[in-house]
Length: 258
Image (cartoon, rainbow, N blue to C red; front, side):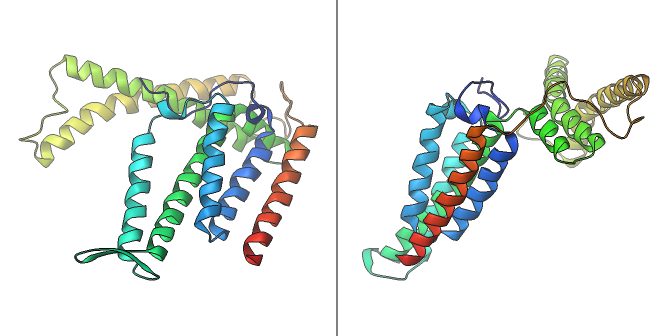
C-alpha cells in the first residue's frame, strides 16, 4: 500500500527546520516559480526539489498521487507545445507544428506545476501538524483556533480508517460499489447513504466524546495556555531564512539582467 501524503518522522535537515521557516520557503518558492519566466530556471528548481527527497529520506516514488502528477504535467506541457505556434519552426507533422517557443513554454508550464506540487509535498511530509499549530499559537494565533487545526488534522486519518471499515463491511454484506452497469441515480444515492450514514454517526460520536473531554478539562477557561513542547528559532532557521531572501533576490536579479 502506498504511503499517504502525511507527516513522515525523520531526522533530516528539513525535518528539523522550524515549521514557519518551511512555510516561508513554501510561499517564497511558489512566488519565485511564478516570477521567473525562463523554463531553464524552473527546470533547475525542479531538479533541486527532486534531489531533496532522497536527501531527506522521503519515498517520493512510493507516494500516492505521483502518477496523476506526472500525467497532468505531461498533458499541460504537450498542449502548450502543440498549441503555441510562435518562434522558429522545428517540426511539422500535418496540422501539428512544434516551435521553439512552444517547447520552451511547455517545459516551463509543466516544470512549474511539478515544482509547486513537490514544494507542497516536502512541506507536508517533513512538518508535524502539532508543531505547526504550536508554532502558530506562539506567534499569536488564538489557542482555540490552534486546537481546532490540530483536531482536524488528527481526525482525518481516523475518518479515513472508518470509511475503509464501512466500505469493507458493506462489501461483505453484498453491496456492489464497483458495479459498471445498471446504476441509476436512485441506486447511487442509496449506495452513498449506506456508506456515509455510518460515517456521520461515527463522526458525531467522536465529536460528542471530544466535547465532553474538553469540558471536563475546563478548555477555554483561561485566556492563555501553557505548552508541553515549545518550538524556537535555531541558528539553522536563521540561515535558512537568509538563504531564502538572498537566493530569491539573486535569482530574480539575474533573470532580469539576462
